[in-house]
Amino acid sequence: MKQYTQVNGERLLKRLDDFAAIGATPAGGVNRQALSPEDRKARALLAGLAIERGFTVFQDKMANLFIRREGKNKASPPFLIGSHLDSQPTGGRYDGALGTLAAFEVLETLEDGGVETDVPIEVVAWTNEEGSRFAPGTMGSMAFSLGQIPEEWHELRGTDGVSFQDALTETLGALPVAKQRKLCFPILGYLELHIEQGPTLEKENIPIGVVTGIQGTRWLEVTVTGQAAHAGTTQLTFRRDPMVAVASALHTLHSTIMPMDENARLTVGRIAAYPGSINAIPGSVTLTIDLRHPESDRLDAIEAEVLDVFKVSAAAQSCQIDLHKTFDMSPASFSGISINSIETAARDLGLAFKPMVSGAFHDALYISRLAPTAMIFVPCREGLSHNEAEYVEPEHRVAGAQILFQSTLEVLDALSIDSRRLS
Ligand code: GLV
Ligand code: MN
Ligand code: MN
Image 1 (cartoon, rainbow, N blue to C red):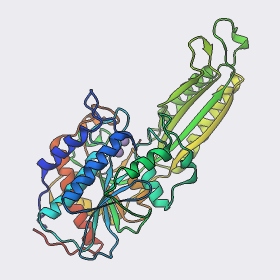
Image 2: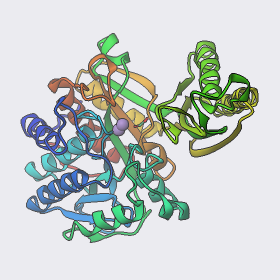
Image 3: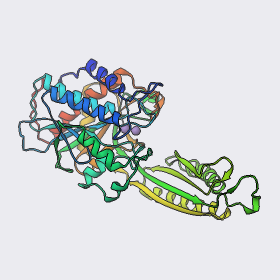
Image 4: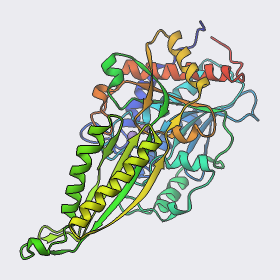
């Protein structure tokens, strides 16, 4: 069994607190939405810490942020470790931040120990993983994997009306220390540490999840259009009420999709009635639907069912529907080499682990299309995430970073490209 240097747990815990102060909410969470002033502040803090340690900072045109610690072979593609710094509007302190700051801790631990790796290792903070201000999610890693920014994103606006292009330009300009990098440069592999965001590890008292893949996600936007009319004077037979159609469709979907398939997930997280007046039947109602399933075929079937149910409910109210897909992320399977390396690291540390499929999507999904990739999960209290009360025990935060440190060196070894010195 190999002996590895220990990461500096105290430093990591303090860093997590420092970053949680950026966009801190009164309820103890974080509001650091993508490309916002708070997001820019967190990026600047991380870049400043990197410069202090003598690392090099880069960003590509999606504002994906890279921090490079050089390897002996400077011409080699880097190995990436990281996550994201943006949060949900009422997000937690660890979703994304843990993986990014633990990755930075890995670089610092290597630097403290004077460990030379054969190849460069880079921390990455992907832009807009959450997708709550600008949809879709994982924009940064998706554009990186495509090698270009999809044309339609230039027209996007955030939930606050701000143009995506303007917010991106401002973010890019706010980090003059960063050198420019092209999208989709070659990489050797990617590892991401993240909180589980579900209850399994805590319930089973297992400190490490070895993530073998990610279930698929689809986002739909549905608009049901009827006729705006007076709330007091319009008799039932004259009403074309899109709210009634939506209520009926959602009732049907909620009582069929998930009860009939325990692996299916259906969530309506945003709904708006127009014109939004207390004494008018709405002219239209728009809502979002988040669908998840580990199997693509089932996602196809559920999407078809959603369409059918809305058609029937809308027809009953003489309303029209318009349904379009805003995000389609196929399920992913991670690399065997990377998975084995995480398992070896957990065994070496004497930590129990469990293979699992991620219910949440992550940047690792797109990066797994480019190079060997896997993820490490640590438990979070009551499985709660996308919530200001999200909490991860300090020992799990540090254990996650130690596993990330060791599995990074393990996977480089397994890929036969590392000649590190063991301490
Ligand atoms: C990621 O934030 C997700 O919604 O799965
Ligand atoms: Mn996340
Ligand atoms: Mn999230």
